[in-house]
Image 1 (cartoon, rainbow, N blue to C red):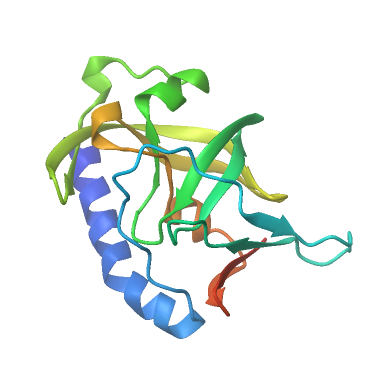
Image 2: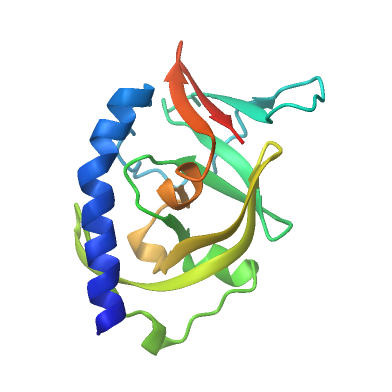
Length: 176
């Protein structure tokens, strides 16, 4: 019970500070979760010249107007839609299982409010998440029932650990 309360408190704090953070650093507002079940199309271009400086990936909008990327979780490919409104990475049960995460029924203990009502999710920790060479280790995520999520969401548990992420000239820029 304490972990649920702690999670809710953290989510409220993040929700309170996120708008100011995005305003200050120029990040765009996320588009709503699509209802389409089409797989995301990789739409990113990593910086081509290797350099000793930070790694950067630039993501352009897909045909739906969303920032869809193909990333890797623990070395396995997975598609995401970038969602700056999501507190954590959200994975469908199907993709979580493919990645080796199989939460038991009792693990679905976190209540999450969505536009379609309240659903229960299972918190997990991902060893490594990478998008176009930009990598973060030990990332919090949540597994949601397949019917609750049409595609995986790349949320703030990844984005907030980057040096910067911003919306610029119609593109989303991530920098490690």
